[in-house]
Amino acid sequence: MVFPWKMLVGPALLIGMKAVKFDYDKPQNLLIIRVVYALTQIVLFAALGYIAYRISKYGDAKHSVKVKVPSATGPAVETEMTHKDYDMSELKKLLKNFGLGAAMTVAIHAYMAVVPALILQMVTQPITLIDHALFLIYILKKDPSKNPKLQRPFVDDSPAAKLEAFKEKAQQERARLEALSAQEQPAALESDVALESDGTPGDVSVSDTQSSLSKVERRSRRAEVGQEEG
Image (cartoon, rainbow, N blue to C red):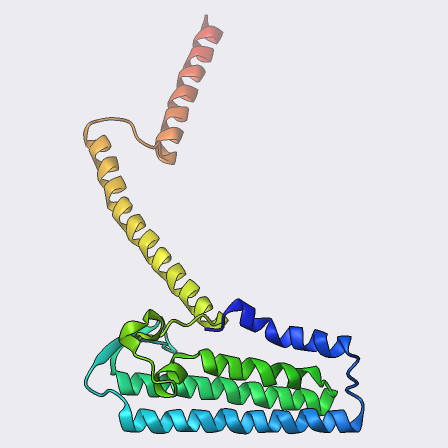
């Protein structure tokens, strides 16, 4: 749910640091970046923990919402969840995304010495959290009834969600085409049967063709025999 202009903050910061000729290789600068990154991650996961505490204490267990849960064996299955359970499931997704992102960034920095990856994540992850509906509801205490963005189920603009929506739409289109094809086949069979009952010639079979050819051959042979006798 990050707006496009917010996604440009990280690259803009890197460009600005390059413009002022910030040297990543200096041990002092590298230490500052690592400390700031570590502090950012501590604050970030502490905020997620506080949101989990507020969901468990103040989550709405009276109202429910219908959501689609991905299935490992087929398309997503629609199920009903309370607002409290739904918010906790969304928090787990956010925690998983942040955890995997941090692990990959640290691995890239440790094994490939890529410093800009730390700087980008110091900016993008806090922006993602601040813009998330759970942060707005449980930290800033916004009213979901007054903001469509905060109404459950939350709008997911992530690439994975868009890909899942595209797959679901493709499956629905395939099912629609199969249903149309199934309806057209009986109609075509009924049409063929009606043509045959009316005596209208339909498709010529191989046996009928061979029979016609044999009759023509017999007639031509009789004509040749008659000419020879004459």
